[in-house]
Image 1 (spheres, rainbow, N blue to C red):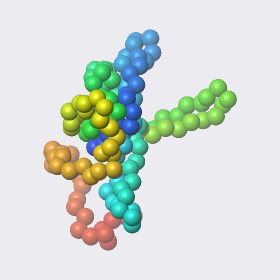
Image 2: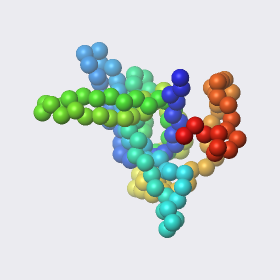
Image 3: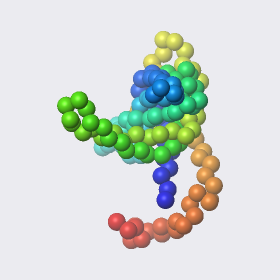
Image 4: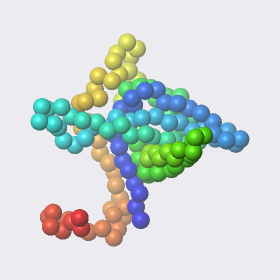
Length: 148
């Protein structure tokens, strides 16, 4: 089975670094604004806001170095979890647990608007995938080959 996600986007706010459990394991959470691949009729591009979680050393690096507006590439897996609140209501969250975070821009100078480029296209990012990542998959020649 394959559960692999690769996203490129900008942080919507500063990351939150905390220490989980009695073991004091670092965990950082942040939200990534990721442009959709299409534009609306008026030319606007919509974005999805994806929750990201990092653990241990990667959490410390992200928590100490990322800021609102930074452009990053994230690779990891999708995870869904649930919990019950004090009132007995069940909550669900789907998030990306990151294995790797690459900083794609430099720190913005203070006073600049870090969110100004959220709606702009992101280009020129090469993803280096090994062909073994796709063993067992066959290419789709046309839409008629899709199973759905």
